[in-house]
Length: 161
Image 1 (cartoon, one colour):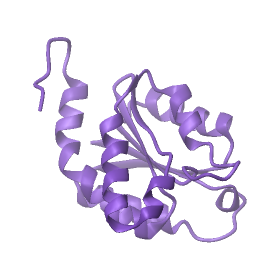
Image 2 (cartoon, helix red, strand yellow):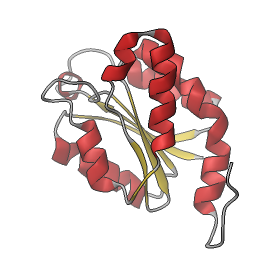
Image 3 (cartoon, one colour):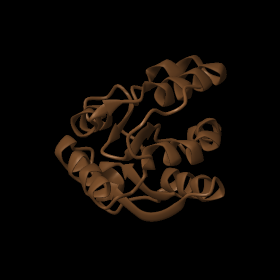
Image 4 (tube, rainbow, N blue to C red):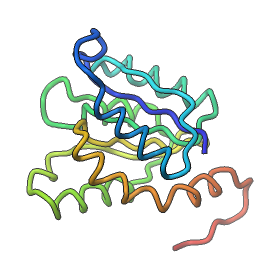
């Protein structure tokens, strides 16, 4: 499963701090069988985020996971950038992440992360906290092989679950 991980953070893009959320996301993705071929830190800028997402779609990555930029502050623009790139919504992933987060904390409803398909790539926005990544990624992990197999399928109908 060809995968890219993008950390959205102006602070980290400027070289300050450690990318702990990105580290955790890569670790968990690899444990789930993903081959993380690309990893980058992108500034909290909608155009920069959209450009990075499009580059990974063009590179034929099957999965792109973002961490950060999904909250309520004015510079949290990851969902808007993702919407500008995706061709089709795949809301179940974001809904499942929010549902799991709400089981842990009422603040889970503050996440505005989205999920969707661009070409044959699934893009999923996750929060920017390593703790949240650790709590939420296990919700996604069991679905990933089926997601990739479905995205690779040519035409025809896919099984509904």
